[in-house]
Amino acid sequence: MLRTSVATGAGAVGLATVSAVALRGNRSGSAGTPAHLRGAAPLPFTQIHSFDLTASADGHSKVLRAAHHAIAAIDGGDIAAWLALGEGALPSRTDRPRYLKKMPSFAGDVLDPVQSHGDLMLHITGASADAVRQAAEQALRALPHQQVRWRADGTRPENRTEDGRGLSRNPFHFTEGHGNPAAAADITERATVRTGQGEPSWAVGGSYQVIRIIRLATDFWDRDSVHEQERIIGRRRNGRWLDGTPSTDRAVFATDPHGKTTPLDSHVRRAAPNPRTSPSMVRRSYNYNRGPDDQGLIFSCFQSDLEKGFEAVQRRLQGEAMAKYTLTTGGGYFFVPPPGDDWLHALAES
Image 1 (tube, helix red, strand yellow):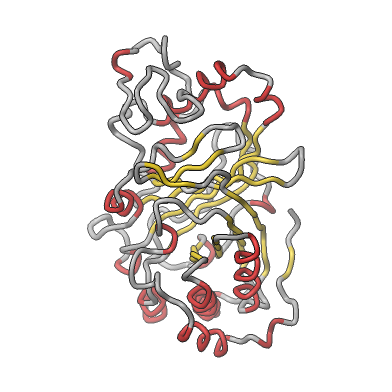
Image 2 (cartoon, rainbow, N blue to C red; image 1 turned 30 degrees about the vertical axis):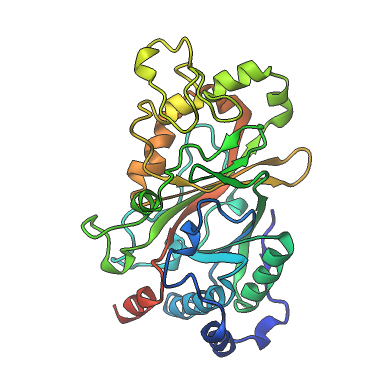
């Protein structure tokens, strides 16, 4: 997707105006659960906008404040919205989150530069496509001089909550979300930076977010039998384990050491060889469809530690049977600041 500008005559909505709107807007989520972790199941529609900031390093704080107020003005009710910082949002700072960097290319990736990385990301989710579109337009008007690097639109088909977990159907016809924790406290534990992790004090309460634009070879995939697809994934389409264990319980791979029931190169077995020790991240992904030749998954996950979360899983997935059906073309590493605006003040004062 080519870069586009959001300069649409929206300069009439300046920083002061947006700030005033934010103060009187619905900010029900700002003091409680962060927007990116709100609800067992994410809202079913999303727009993601990643920006190249055009302001100087000294001017970044003003842009971040404008973006923060714009997000605060739309967050709440049928919208859950947040901003996330890329490496370039905090140039030359020594107090940026320790793992915040450009997302590297992993084995098999073909990252398109115009669909990857970014200095600032706005992630807007909502109960309807129209609600998301209107909220995104309002937020973008607050950043009239900033450059949109890439954008992604997604949906969560069959979006629902079962046994405390948010589930949806991915383009390969399988149910997503069974690997997430069911309890809100466990979600927070996996996704939220805590004191004592070696992170700057302003980042405590925030989350590392990884976005991966993964093109799926759905036509190629659909040529395989359902039985073969299930062995590649390592679960039934409805989430049940191949050994018959219910989706809400843990499979015991130790009783299948040679992978006769659940292949050793299946997706779930590579991702979590010991299912009693779940990956240290929370997945909240969406499907995308840009046409018959470009559809797939907007993989999104949150964690407190990027190395122990996404990167550890990604290393284990090398050589999985599903690799020939997927191609990662974009995305990036970002950091979602903690709720409220104390982080803005901390960055401005340091």
